[in-house]
Image 1 (cartoon, helix red, strand yellow):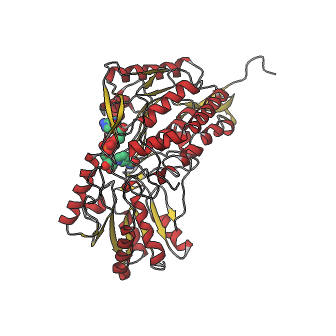
Image 2 (cartoon, protein in one colour):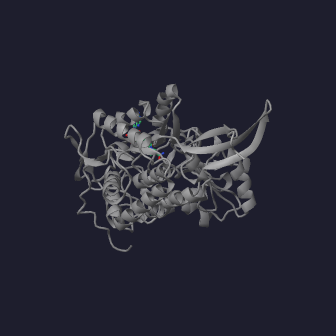
Image 3 (cartoon, protein in one colour):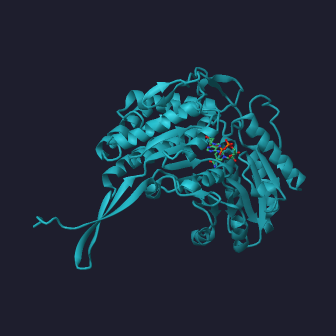
Length: 499
Ligand code: NAD
């Protein structure tokens, strides 16, 4: 991990996977894949249109309706094992590709960007196929003198539209695929146009290295966001699994509502790191700079730091020093923990929030602009705002950049009030010298996951998702697995010739 990872020879997969065939867009159009650290064009990807998407949806529907994919447990398990092996064989290429197209720091690929999900996102649901109670028996019931036996069957939902973001593209896509496929569904995956190659690579590996039948997985790349919406409104798609912004999530929920289509929405966050007054501030507060990992482009990043009012100045100084130590630069250099924003649009959006913070009266203690030594690439300086009030825009909205708001609280109840006083409810960090006190605070937080004294909840077996505007449903865990299943209650009577 000491030397830079070469991303120079990146040539990604241009073709999509539709109905078992690696294919270009019908129109022949392609779009550029840009390296956000250098602004150089890495290569191109097929730019699908609505007709391509239509073909992919039809293929997924057919594969669900006309093959035994949804019922053949042993076959699905074998296919997932084949895909696991294929991905492991190309792990290093995938690592370089993620660094190049997402601008994610190399160090993150040894964790949540690549290695953690590669380890369990397919394996865990594949193993669960063997032990999951696909059928259970309820006690017999007697009505009107007739004895009925009763069963509950768990069945695949059908075709799942999987709409993915650009910040942790492989992690999200493989997390969705593991659960969608293990539960017997078929799918059309729509990656974000900023990061298409990790998904087209998956498509190629599925086509070339697995027995997954044609149409079970389709990967459709496009610059047209409306292809995502096509998945939402097409009646042949039974469920939409979406990870991305709350604004788009709301629109998906609205568009899906007339069909009463099942939606799983993993959306934005504005998570708080709460440092209670019994903490050693020097040992705790600098950890807030972890939110600069991948330039703050993570939905669960702790972007509000809540500290005791009595020690506010000390905490601001400590976190400002920690931000000064954040290494920003070439993401292929494992020494850097913060690379660029994914695009010029995202950089400008983050800079806009910084200006808004200043205009609303908050004080920049470090950062606040584009780093002078990185005029090229979409970099933003790690930025700390002090004197933030919880009603300020930078304390309320998801910035998705390396920008921290430091907010004082009076006591534990006040910390809980401030943390919960937000539309989002995704995650959070709670620090205390007394674990029971930290748990007491954690129980009062309206959030879907918590890190107590830095503990990790992460894993394919761990249900992940949000309260409030942070989403509906859970990715991963038994909860996520079951979300991809329908439930059928069956009553039956003895045949005349039984016994
Ligand atoms: P987005 O939510 O609009 O895009 C995510 C995915 O949704 C992409 O694949 C996109 O093509 C697709 N999409 C867009 N419009 C759609 C629609 N109407 N119907 C169906 N699919 C649609 O996010 P973005 O515009 O790329 O980024 C904007 C902001 O979203 C970011 O600044 C950040 O705050 C937030 N974001 C959050 C996450 C997260 O994990 N919570 C991930 C990415 C972006």
